[in-house]
Length: 194
Image 1 (cartoon, rainbow, N blue to C red):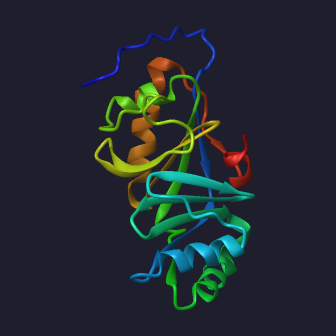
Image 2 (tube, rainbow, N blue to C red):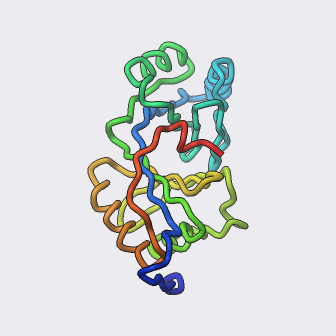
């Protein structure tokens, strides 16, 4: 099922924006039976690990619960060199940390038609009533594994780095009838700002 067509005249201002960011991404995985312990450890260090299907913003960190007993934590890129080691040391016997910074690309589609663009090739119901701000889910968009997070300023999209070019080109082509501006590089802080 496809979303309704939208028309964009040449003189119409862009209604969508595609933003790219370079973030440190660490996956935290709780060892069997130690989810509560890992959650407590993260909370003690200022990071809320949300329940499955949700996202939690803690300062300049965004934690995503998209798999049982596992979370993705996005942080500003400047901290990448030590983020993994710090998380691994903090996890102790409760879990483990894996650096996924090079394996995932971070994009954000902003604007009133962002959900309509993704609806053209996404199996999720992205209507704000069913996928409100703070929700996170793993799905397939344009034949690419994608994690979608509803944030106040748009939809955050995490995709494998190996398919980023295809995914970005698909987004730009699909968003063209709605009106889309040039791609902007932004910091994680800007990406997560409300």
